[in-house]
Image 1: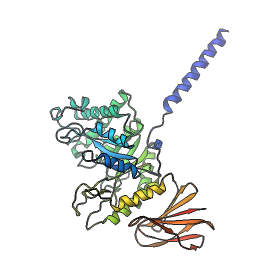
Image 2: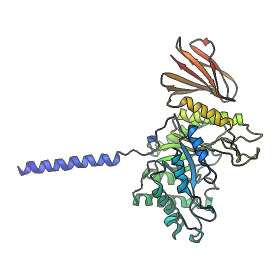
Image 3: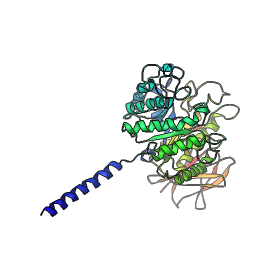
Length: 434
C-alpha cells in the first residue's frame, strides 16, 4: 500500500513538473508574434519634439500601426529640453498606435561624467559607475517603467555609424550590451519584442547592404550574437537603405542564411528604418513615391513583419537637401505623392495575405489574396514591359493606378489566358475576382 501511495505521489509530482515547464516556456516572443491588419505592419519615424496629436491621429487613419522614436537619457549635451517621453508614449497610445522605442545614449553614447547628467527621468543611470553601467541602468530602468505601454523595444541606433557611436567606443559595445542584458535578467524583465542594433550596414555578410560600403565591425556582430543566444534580444534590426528596393530581397535571404548558420533560427528580421528623400535635382516627389511604394511591396515579398519608414515629416524646407526631405509630408504639412499612393494601396491591401512573388527579367509581380479576390501588383525597375496576369474565363478585373493619384478603371480586353498590362516603375494593381 505504501509502495502504491509513493508511486502515486511521485507520478503526481512528475506530472506537475511536466506541466510547469511548458507553461514557463510557452510564452512566445519575437517579431513573429506580431499581428497586423496588413501584409507588413507599417511604422513611421516621428520627431518627439514636434509631433502633434493631430499628426498621430492622421498616422493611424492612414494605415500605420506603429511610430518609432528614439529615447535619450537626461544628459545636457543631447537632451537639453528633457523631452517628456512618458507623456509622448501615452499620447501615442491614445491615438491607438503602438510605439517602437529606440534606446540610445548621449553624445558619446553612454554619456560623459556623472556630473553631466541632469535630474528627472535618469533613474540609477544618473549615478556613478562605468559608462557601460550607466547606459545599462538607464535602458533597463526605462524599459521597466514603460513595459506595459511599449510594444517593441530597440537597443541602439546604427552603432556602425560614427554619428551614433564613436569608433573608439566600438570595443566597449559588447560590455554595455552584456550589462543591459544582465540588468534585464536580474529584474526579470522580458519584453515580448526587443530588437538590436539598428545596423546601418548589413551585418554578417561582409559589407554592402543598404547602408553604404564597408563592413560592420566584428565586435558589434559578436555583441548581437551573444545577446540573441542568451534570449536577451529577440530579433535583429537593420536599415536597408539602397538605390532601388528590389535588391533588398537577396540581402534579406543572405542575412537569414547567416543568422541560421549561427544557430539563431528563431531570430527574426526587422527593417526599423528605411526611406527615400525627394530632393532636387536627384529625385522628385513622383520618384520618391514609386520607390517607397516598391519598398513596401518588397518587404511583403520577403515576409518581413515590420517596416519603419523614414520619416513622417520633412526636417527642413530646402529643396536641395537630402536630409531635409525624407518625409511623407512636407515641413509645412502638405501630403506628398508617396503618402497618397501608399495609403490608398493600404486601403485595398488591408486583410490580404501574400500568395507569391516573382521577378522575371526585371518585371516584378506580387500576388495577394483578399477574400475571394486576387490582387496582382506589377511594376518594373526601369523601362516599360508587358506583363501577363492570369485570370479564368469570365473573371472580373479592375485596374487601379496610384500615380500621380489613385484612379480605378477597366483592365481592357483579355489577352490569352488573362489580361496584359504595361508595367512601369510606378506599380499598378489588377484586382481579379470570380
